[in-house]
Image (tube, one colour):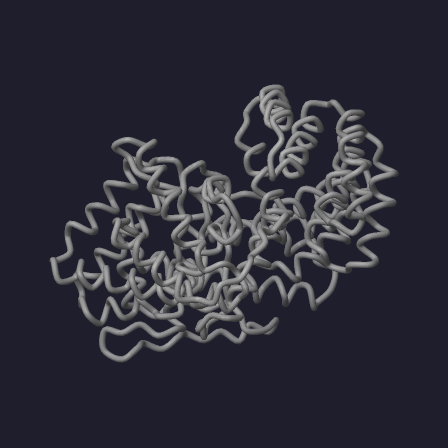
Length: 477
């Protein structure tokens, strides 16, 4: 992994096809040791291939939709020039987030669970977006020359290990990369952190969120450090936290005009979704959320929502429906509650009711990701494989880099008898995970099944593209 990243810094990278005809171009080098935006973009995509293979990527459509909407809202007030982002959610209980050159933003679900409100969560996101917009990676290369390549490669390799559930190895890689730097380089890194803090807070306030969220999140991390003992939250491995930094965040937040900020109810609901996902036993989840609901508090609605999810997983559908009913009546347009009701029906085997409700709402909100994925699930459960195939085949055009979506599409295509589509979808899934050999094998299996010249040409074009990527990766050793 580290060797691959090192070479990617200095070699032109293979681009994705600009159009269906396969107009492939190799990006140009930057001046001297600098890295162009184009190089950063492809470096990030190459790294993401390895990351997807090793990290437990979250496939929760509601959570993904919420996080993406929040990030793109924050991007509007940012200085990002390259806005082709890839947002990756990792199922991991640790507090962590990272930005990889080229627009890769990674978030551990533990960060969502530990943040007390949306402003705290957003403060980490704006900080990471500031690292991207200020191009700290490229500027670091210019300052540190070749030695920084090893440092950055070790750092990115460490992020993979941490997200994949090997924190000791990840910590060793991260700390090793930092130890390899000279003292002047470490000072430069601290300057970047200060710059990301300042610009992140500025952009957060411009986006209408509480700039005090940063100091609040720092306090959460400090508490986490005490609870973690000798192993601090993963975020602090690459973002050292000091009392001065916390004080600086509080002082800067105080310079913004005073106003009352309301927390996002949606964030608290997503927080409950994450917390439920961390339970291995649905009975334990039900018990813990019952206890929390009995205690009351300002987030009682979100806790009740978590209990509904746990009850659904535990097969207690009647109580789940009873608890959800007043919430649906109070917010009839809530997609979160709509999907919750549909999932109760699907889990209970009442597929027709779920399908009718989801189809009606998808007609009102065409292309909505959570509704589409829930409807596809209902179609599949009820044996409507061709409908699921048609629905997901259309949806994947808007989400071509969603590996999980390609995997689900391949599954329903196999069940519907669409073997040509099955092989093509599997090829895209393998390619997104960097398995070019398997991707090419799937397309070669698809070729004899093609029924017209247009499809044959499209498959050949895709094979040529995957072979080019495969050669490039092999040449890098």
